[in-house]
Length: 330
Image 1: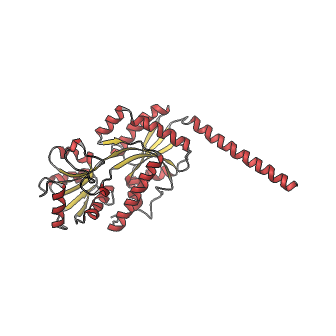
Image 2 (image 1 turned 90 degrees about the vertical axis):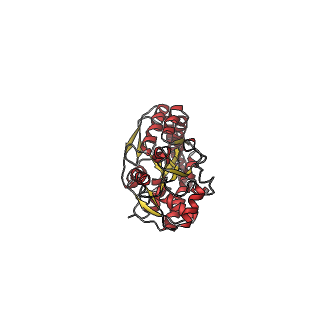
Image 3 (image 1 turned 60 degrees about the vertical axis):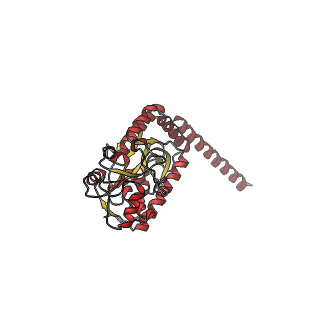
């Protein structure tokens, strides 16, 4: 009887402890946020990731009643900042910005030395915004539309070169995915960033360019590059008449890039949902929408579950392209 009674007491104490712990977590979530929130941007200031992060979190700060302080931690293709964010306390006070590069491309290209797991180490909050990708050509390229573009490439395997922002970057993978989907053979020329790649495409040193649309938009609008297709849900007025990859018959290529918000794995869902709700309010603000549009981006604000699915799909895509095309870092 004593043993039975002791066991009953132990269970009661344990149950009470669990109940107290659950109540304390709920109470903490109710009070959240009670101090400034740190947001790690895993790239240098001034780029698209940094700009979008600051636009959205500034408006979120107003909704949450606490500052969201952006901290740039660049290096290793975003791996340094993402790694620090993955190791942070799961209390909602250290968050990070996710990109296709940090969550899909890096894991595919650096499987042995990446210090974080994009699927296991993070809790997705929401996708802030999407940005279109584009394949464009120098105006002297023989073809003037997508159909003719593919026909020209198939007639001349290995003749033409395409530029990207760097080896094993998202635009390199886009180019290799394009080759796989279309059955064409074009030669990759890696650059140190989109700027030099755009300049050489305009100058004719390379014939083809895979890029984020905002980087090459001015040259396209000025007639110095011809856009063949865009990765976007629908056609864009700023590049009137240019088909989406889906319109052109290649839906697998219709993948824009995205910029979203992550919390460390284990962050209470009450906190995650508060952050997501604040982001949705921010992304419906006309000023934020206009500022994103000026960056060539469109707001998303999907659920944590939807964003997790989005991340996994891109992760699987990158793994597949890197493996099939035998892509290796220099």
